[in-house]
Image (cartoon, rainbow, N blue to C red):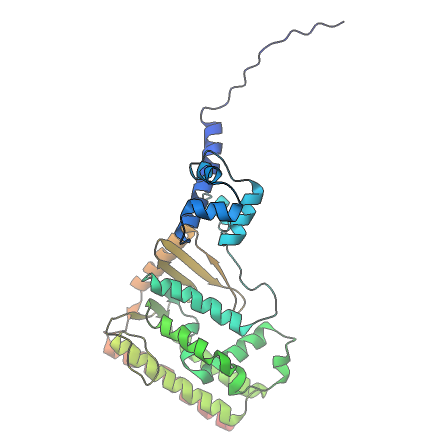
Length: 352
């Protein structure tokens, strides 16, 4: 028989290792509790009792971080309060940034898309937030004040997104956006017009849409009268943007501003390429939106990434020319260029 001598073996664990692992998890739980409390009208203890079907004592133990959430409880909380557990877990990583991707299929519901935009803009407006927009194309929010251009742009964008869509086989018409959504589109622009915004445009931001109108005419998806009407509407749009820049305020075409507050900061930059990216900050939230395949986008509120994104916007703005409320000469030159470009497109349409 072999005799085995028993010894107490001491493994040397670096001081604080277990504590840090435990602390990181509890930090995550504290973040979850903070989010529930922030987005709820009831007391935190009542929310936990109702959501997790636990007693008051059990709820307080979780609030005091004496008891950690189980996996089932985390799933219930995530579903009930729309909290991204992935984002909480990766939030402390300097190399990982989690983006959400709202539309994952080719099926596209206009009403759902419009409602998502409206609800997000309302959060920014209600919290007196600020938006920054790097405009490769005319910022989508502006189209919601003009039925004709809105219908054209969405018909064009959805054609690009859906190669096998029935849209391809149908010519464009101004009723492409259903009448029942008209009020919704008006609400979207009404909210956007009251948000502090900084938009960075270049010489192709508006002319891109003019080119798209001509391209649609060449494809036979719109007739000559529609092409001419859309180009002239776009020219009116250009005049409206110039008026908004003069007042440094956003408002509906042919109407007066909602208030006298200067909330429209319009910059031009012909050197740095714009990409339709957006940065927004409101309350204690900092969000970044990146375009993805035409109408879709990816979004994150990762603070580290959003701070970096804001620094890029700040740097670009410093190298751009502000033409809202000031620089009348540069403002006139910029919008005159746009209207001359549209006039050339009108001549091209008439000779095709």
